[in-house]
Length: 388
Ligand code: NZQ
Ligand code: ZN
Image 1 (cartoon, rainbow, N blue to C red):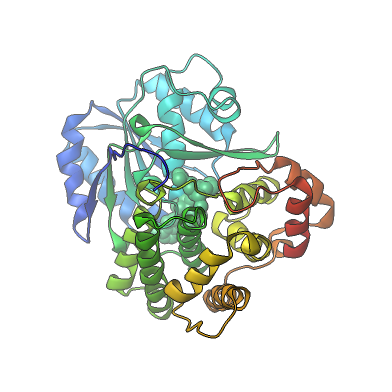
Image 2: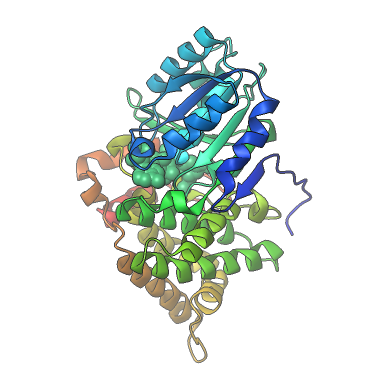
C-alpha cells in the first residue's frame, strides 16, 4: 500500500427497485425550499419527474424548478442556477438525472454562498469552499460517473474551451443518493454503453498505477469482471434487473474513492478525454473510449507486469508460454474486442475532432504523474493523432 490514508464516505445510499420511497425519510431533515435539478426532459417522459414531485408535495416542500441541465454542464448554466438559488433561499438541491445533474448540483452547492467567481475559484485555482455549502441529494437515472457517491464535479467552459473536474472534499459529497436500477431502463443504448465504459475506465485509471501487492487492485479486478459480465446481459436485455443493478452498483464503487486508497492513480485517459470533450461536447464515455487504446498501447511497456495481470485476471487469458509483451497485448486486444462488441466509438474523428484541433486539445490536456509514464505534450498529440 502506498502511503497512509484516511477513508470516509459521507453519502447515505438507498438502493433497489423501491428506493425512491426513502426520499420521504430524507426530506424532513431539510428546509422548505428545494431546487429540483434535472436535465433535458427524460425524467418527464419516463414518469420519474411525476413520482418525485408527488413526494416533494406530500412533504410540504416548495419546489423551485431548475431543468435543462445539459450533458457536460456549463459554467453559464451554473451562473443561472446560482441566481435561482439565491432568489429562492434554497435549503436543499435535489438532482434527478445522470452525472451531469449530480455534478451541476454539487457545483451549485458550493457556489450559491460563494463571494468569488466559482469558475475561477474552484476550476482554475482548485481552491476549497470557504462558504456555507447547500446540501445535495441525488436520484440517479444513469449509471456511469459515480457522482452519486463522490465529491467530483466536472464543469465545461465553452468560451475558454476547457472542461475541468474538481474533486472536492467529503463535505461536498451528496448527503444521500437514491439508486433504482429500473430508472436506468429507459436510457438509449448509446448512453448505456457510454456509461459502462466510463465505469470500466474509472477502474482502469486507478488499477494501472503502482507495482505493489495491493488490496485495491483485487477489488478492482472483481468490479471489472462483474461489469463485463453484466454488460453483455444488459445489451441483450436492457430490462435485465440483475444486470442493471450490478452495473449501477459497480459504477458507484468504481469511483466512491475506495479503490483509490493506497494507489497513486493515473487519470490520463480522463484528462485527454475531457480535453476532447471541451472541443467537441461529445458524450463523456465515448471520449474516453476513443482515446483509450492508443493511450494504453503507448504506456504498456512501462507497466508491463500490470498489463499482463490485467490479461490474466480480468480477461481470464491463459498466458502460459507468452512473453510479458505478448500477454499484455492479448489483454488489450480482449479489451478492444469487448469495446467493439458494446458498440463504443473508438475514433475521435467520429466525435468531431479533426487534425487542426490536435494542438489545442493537447494544450487543454492536464498532465498528471500518477500513472506508469508521465506523458509529454508530443505524446499526447501522438495519441490524439492515432485516435482520429
Ligand atoms: O438530460 P436528460 O433528458 O435527462 O437526458 C440524459 C442525457 O441526455 C440522458 N439520460 C439520463 N438518464 C436517462 C436518460 N435518458 C433516458 N432515460 C434515463 N433514465 O442521458 C444523457 C447523458 O446524461 P449525463 O448525465 O450527461 O451522463 P453521465 O452520467 O455520463 O454524466 C456525464 C457528466 O459527468 C462528468 C462528465 O465529464 C460529464 O460532464 N463526470 C463526472 C464525474 C464525477 N463526478 O466523479 C467523473 C466522470 O469521469 C465524469 O467526468
Ligand atoms: Zn469518467
